[in-house]
Image (cartoon, rainbow, N blue to C red; front, side, top):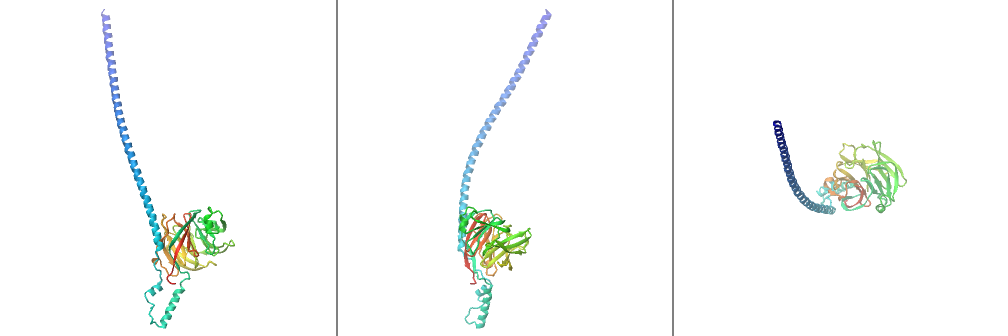
Length: 405
């Protein structure tokens, strides 16, 4: 009986211990689940708060973007207004420049006259009058028959856009034919019968392509009295001026010129090793003697033989120069900036000493596209043929007679 009782007591004790164990385990699991539920509730609250803050941020961002869009619209309108005002100011400046006459340009002889050094009294003797006449003859002997100076730009005509950003086009003063040199080098160019044909033609179609016996270098060619004058470089060592007969299509003469091949006459157009120009007085060559030479040099050439008749130092710097042209023996050098802005005539040199750069007016070209690659003067029309970023432009000039006339 006792063993059975002990067994029953032991079994009851074991069941009671197991019950306590499982109850503790259930309490532990319940506590863990409650903790997880608390964390989930906390995460839900945090997520809701973040979502609310994100919605508020999105709303603020949208409001800020709307405000920025409105400010951008206002700023854009202000910029458009400023651009219109700048254009109007430029037009007014162009008008003022065309209406403003250049300051008087006189040489020493004129200043002596103004000061009365030669005397205008009626009581002068015959000997004094003879001396005065001799002095006037000496002064006038140095003055060319061409007696005009540039006073401004009357109008601008944009014909079309053909070819490369850099090139040259011009018209022979003795005919109506137009010549187009696309790019800064090549062995051919194009001939049109007139400016109207060139303007109305699509591209360069309808032109006559002329092949040269050698490659031209730079946009510095010139057409004068039925002949083409262009720059040729052999092996990047020798610089030569070539005279080409446009009627008979062959080279009539070649002249070597003593310049360094790597020295460009205009620093803003390094492809222009030398620049040929033609005016009423004949053929001119603008060049740089060397890289170390800061100024532009000028040479008067015989159009028939290409002989150098005389050389001058223009005292016009090569730095920031983009092009130049010659009118009645006066060199007008056009300057610009590295980032192309309004081109301006800032320096000039007169071979007859009738104009000095300090007394000449500073005038601007109307702003167009970029910078001039070439400017060619036509003495018959009093016009400049310009190549500006691939656009072919004609500037009609206003001229004024020189003082000693």
